[in-house]
Amino acid sequence: MKSDAVTINIKDIIITLSLLCQVSPASSWAEPMYNSGLFTYLITTLAEGEVRMICWLPKGVTNLPKCGVMLLTEYVYLFARIVLADRAIFLQLMSAAANATGLTEKYLFEGLLDQWWGKVRDFILFFTKYT
Image (cartoon, rainbow, N blue to C red; front, top):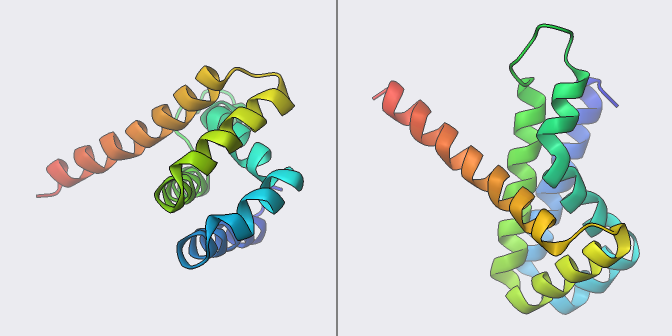
């Protein structure tokens, strides 16, 4: 799943999920998102995202490919939408994902917040560099 077409399709699916979280009640998508394993997959991918992306790079390359950063940013945006839709359901989903994967809730929250802060930091650095 390294091709540009697959990356664009995944990005479009994440954007669609963000829209779904924005326009429909959390009760209509939270349980199916958990039962299908989608939430668990998304949060673990986000928490481990940059590690996975670095593993795909050729030896000696230290920067992440743009598609990886773009996807991780969309994941952060999706989780922001989920939190805004219903924070109690988000907390339940995080707890259930931790139980399903054997990972700790702390690990998943730290991964999410590290990714979020990394994207904010990158935006600030970019903005200050070009203004």
